[in-house]
Length: 329
Ligand SMILES: [Ca+2]
Image (cartoon, helix red, strand yellow):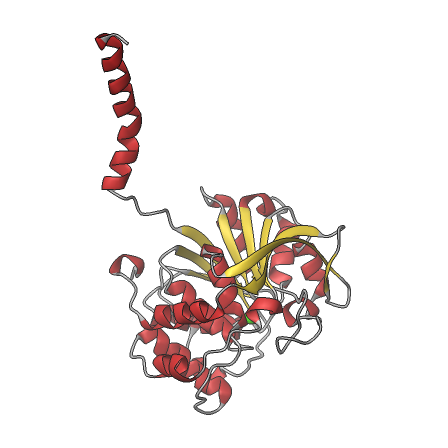
């Protein structure tokens, strides 16, 4: 090789390696994942924990939270007051279907004196349309985290089927090989059983889907020291979770209820702690989620690699202040 050629090779190599050297010297923060949460917050308490986990996860950029499965005013008030308490009224609130529905449930007392009009951020009276518009306007694909019965999502798909090509769906749905209580047989899971038709629409749409069925999410419960860390925390978001939990539980429990929905939030930014399987799933009319070659192939958190590590992550995140850059007043 002539000296000339050797120099040429050396310069070429330096040129090729330069970007990776630079990246190593100045690590770039990965872009945040834009997310929308569709939630039946206000019935089971786990949605409140899930919303808290989103707000505490630096990987996620929450754009909009919509209350699903009716009780629309009550759910919108819970979402708005929770976001305001977390100093995150930059996040928009969407009122779900049947806004005239004034029914409430176990967290009603937390919002009895809260006026939705006092929310400093944006409140969309048509939350389904806000969900569609946010997905369609996003320059990068939105991750739709769905943790309740899905009439809103089905209606959004009906109004604008194109959202399925612009969003990724991550949800807490179904029961594949396990049912409630860990080792029972598969059973119709509530989010599916409450509106199987809506789920059939969601489970046949074109989007990339990831689910946590009862097989994984049904096993998450914080006990003893892990729960005590939460109960004793002075973090404003952790305190709001515990306030709501005590109202909902009508007492001061010393362990959490099962925190199904938190696993869907985790899967929006990582699958490391779960064993993921690609399974074809079909929603039957009775609410069963069946492995069926005719079903839609999706990523299923089929079992845990390390459930204890997930619980530790949950406790740590909920009780640790987010970096200033993540809380935008
Ligand atoms: Ca839920």
